[in-house]
Length: 217
Length: 217
DNA sequence: AGATTACACAGGGTTTTTCCTGTTTATGCT
DNA sequence: AGCATAAACAGGAAAAACCCTGTGTAATCT
Image (cartoon, rainbow over all chains, first blue to last red; front, side, top):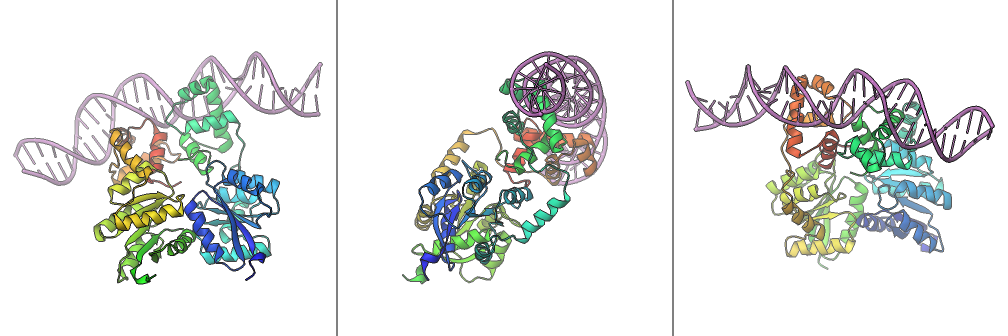
């Protein structure tokens, strides 16, 4: 096999063990070669700058420290639109799938897929430009039916800070003190956010924040 | 190398891609060989029964469907105490670490460890019987200082059901209706649980439930 | 310049949560 | 039978959460 004609892959995942193992696996596929690994988005940005040849495909994890998959994909589509990005996440979360597709991911896979499926996906992505699994198709179809919850409402700095603190055992009064705002203002944030997201109570907010990676456990 | 003298490994992880990749990695280590993989605890139980030779080491994930790492380890220590189990989790969660050690795990690793570290750990486990990383030592030391929260208090069926529902947007009154109990009884559950776990409010309970895998997101 | 929007804040109310201290009833134990 | 223990339940009350409407003020748009 002429390795010069291999399609080049980059793996972005903070789980070193996974990345290294995956590298071995992909290198055993015919026609594909991992040219480098990165631990997170920032690391990737850095490595891409010191590289003469861009990878054909980037396998991108979502849950990463420093710079997560969403931010990373956003940066990639803006700066390297030719690189095909495949999301490789542990979470079967419709929200994640849709967010990544919206940003231009060419596929979305759970880490429990069969190695053969990955190989097939890599081939398809090179030939057709994308590989949408059944899960991805389902997520897209479902999204057509749901007009209820907003996909990703925007929150400003204060609101985000409030949400994070609301996911702790702090009372709203304590949150207001920490934010150096009146309790009434903070209550206003709460009302706005509840209305925007259609929440019934604080537990709902916590769940929303978790589902949307606004906070970590 | 005489593969007959290789130390044998089993990988238990529901992420097929990870398991397969890891298999390739471990097989590239000198003196170690993956003899089989399982997707979760039940799968492992099944496969162990149809096996003449037990593996020397089991690499065990924690977050798995059907039968998770905690239950699996418990079963293993009861039924196959000679197998050395290494926990291999994504979560840097002190609670997880301590629970697994208490059950007899010979090591606990995050999936972001360096492949070399894993190799070293496998060797150590065969030679010394264990490999406790700095993270594990820290968790143990910390546990010496904390007399505050109980490690894993037991909850009965009703309490567990209550906890799960308390992690939704239901009010306590609604929970009581669903459980066909008086609101006062349910409030009693709440008080007991809050006191047992040292919680300040419902958000704390949600966080506890998540950290301890009582619920899934 | 006038209108719109965003933000901080208040008044004032209802509902829910949180907490304490009890009683009754059933169950198991010796 | 006597006793401890657990489970279901209540009264009562303070704190917190929740919700609506409205005001002043500064920034932004047209």
